[in-house]
Image 1: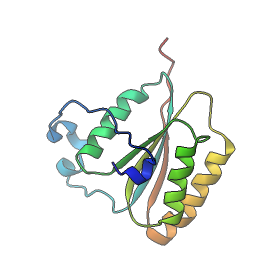
Image 2: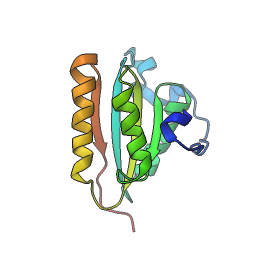
Image 3: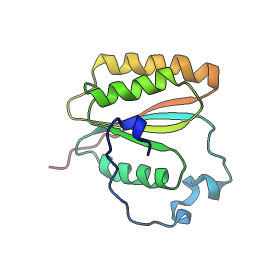
Length: 140
């Protein structure tokens, strides 16, 4: 957690301690696969699709130092603009997951922002830039 990503002093909720070895073959330490030098993941969390469970896994890996984790409620709020500003102005190798929590879709401006990130990170730095979401029948 870095205060400059958030612009405010919020800290993600603490998570239950899970021994690292319980992650199975997906764990790079157990599979012998190294973590990428640079990876940016944008996780669009659609409500009622299991995203909170995924968030807890991501936060735990961030606590273990595998990457930085940043949460924003929408791409239409100042926090998203701060995150984009940091990524566009301070281009460097990093491992970062940004969770965008939304209910009713993603505005086109989000895809334009990700396109700019890809131009700065993928070819020049060899960085993976990935968009992730989860879909399922909503739990009511």
